[in-house]
Image 1: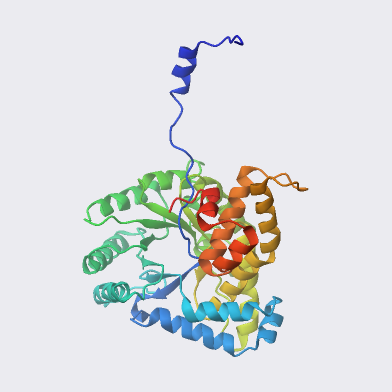
Image 2: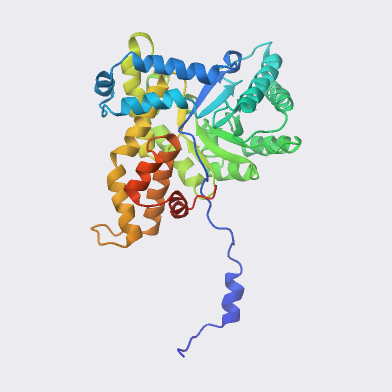
Length: 393
C-alpha cells in the first residue's frame, strides 16, 4: 500500500471547518418578463386584455412585415401569435409605487385587487407568477402607506397561492431589508419578496463594499429575485435623460455586480425596462428598440425583464424565441455528444452541459421549443435534462 504523510485526524479536523452547503441556483420556472400594471387599472380581465392588445398590435402586420421590422425568421410570427393566444402574461405585478402614485383610494384598491387575484387563482386564470409592488421605505410617510397597503392586500388575499411575490423598491440600505423581512415575519403567511436594485447604494454601500450580498443576507431566505430599475438607477448616477437607457455602461456595471453577487444564492435576476413604447406612429421604432434591448439582456445572462405596454409582448417573445432557436440544433448536438461521450471538436465540461440543459429548459418553459421537438433534437428525456441542469423543482 502506498505511503502517505498527512495525519488523517489532523486533515479531518481542518476539513470539518468547510461549509456543508452546496452552491444553489434558482430552481423551477423563471418567467421571461414582468408586466407592471398600475393598481387602479387592474381588474379581472387584465391578463386577457394585455394579451388581446398585444395580439391586435401583432396582427396589424403580416408575417413577412413583422420579420422585416425585426430581422427575424418569418416562422417566429406564428410562434409568437400562439403564445399571445395561450399565455400572453407570464408574470404580473400590481403596481402601488411609481405607476400608481399617491391616491386617496389606495386602501380600496389594495383590497379590491387582492380579491381579483383570489378570483384569478380560483378560476385557474392567474399568471404563472404574480404579486404587488409596494411603496418604498424612502420616507416615514411612504413606509406607513406601503405597509398598510401590504397588510390590507395580504389580509384580503388570505392563503398565499403559489407564484405570489412582493416587490420591494428603491432599497438604499441593509436596514431597510432587515426591517422589511422582520415585518413579513409578523404575517401568518410565508411571504417572499424581490429587491429592486435601482439606487447606487444598493450596488456599493457607504463604506465601499458590495451591497447586494448584504441585502440578500438581510432577507433571511425570503429574497427570491433582484430586479434592476433602469431609470431610477441611471438618475441616481447623475445621468441626463438622453443617456438613461438599458444599454448605458452604468447599467452594465450594476448588472455585473448583481450577477456576481447573486451567484450561488438561489436568487433570480431580472433586467429593467425601456420607456420607448411601440405606440402610435412609433410602433416599429419601439419594437426595434425593445427587441434589441431584450436580445442584449439575454446575451448578458438576464433572462427576464420588465414590460410596460401590451405591444411589447410581441417583441418580448420574438426576441426570446429567436435567442433560443438560433442555436437550438447546434446546442442539441453539443449536449448529445457530451452525454454520448462521442468524438467532437469541442471538449465540454460538466458546467457547460449544465448551462446547455438549463437553456433548453428555459426554452421549453416559455414555449420557444415544444417537448417533442426537444426530445427529438437531444435524445434526452425531461428528467434527464433536469438532472443535467441540476434543477430541483
